[in-house]
Length: 316
Ligand code: SF4
Image (cartoon, rainbow, N blue to C red; front, side):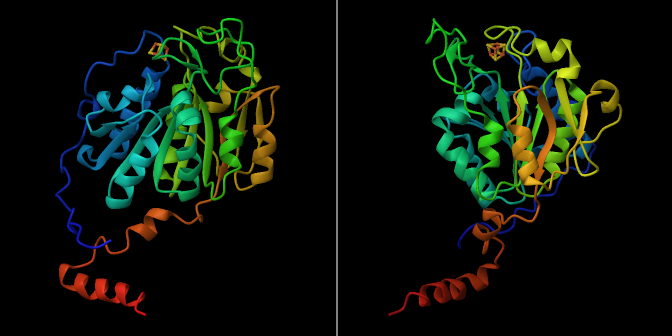
């Protein structure tokens, strides 16, 4: 791509950024909503990593969790339903210097945005995708979402959802070029933080499914796991999600090498237990943004020649 501005090297802040530098409006989610915990974790991560707010972008679609960009004092784009990922890809492909975070819900990502979701995984652009999965459309007041369990009563299915839900982890693990897939639970801030940190450090698209509490429309959805941590299975590995004291919080663990895709898929298929941690990581997967960014940093004087060379390829 030629003709773009090439020098984006605006001097970064040389001051220390505090949490206030990432905190914008007061979050208007319901009390007890899991979104609060994820927002706090991401703001803390930005502070700890000293991500310049002017070099950080939060992109979202539509839904409760998609209010996320309003609460981060960074650049943000609150987009259309299901369209968070193409917007984020556009940002990423033209501004490879930015840190890109995407907030999307189970309805936003796995229903109307499903086509974008699949291809975003395949394009593997460098960004962190947070899937807030509360098993329901909260913003539109309790409609069945693609991840609602079969039999769950909602306003659209008052006698219970008729179909088995889609599994976001299994689906993501099945896509060509998948490079990072993790799962966490909003009620454990240590694990959420460690997961987002690993996701942000990954080169490529990091897909993080967050089991998110919605006390308003799906109260008690995760109570079994919250009250009995032995029903949560923490994946452990040197290359996995690691943080102090996680072993004390989650005593039910399994050794899992995140480079083993077959093992990851087997774990994702388990229904007897809730696995958390890093299912899969492959940092060697091609990133589309690295191809599409060719020419972005090209000096102005060389652009005409590069353009001529490009057009010459099509000379008859
Ligand atoms: Fe959170 Fe549910 Fe309230 Fe939406 S409706 S803000 S998801 S608790």
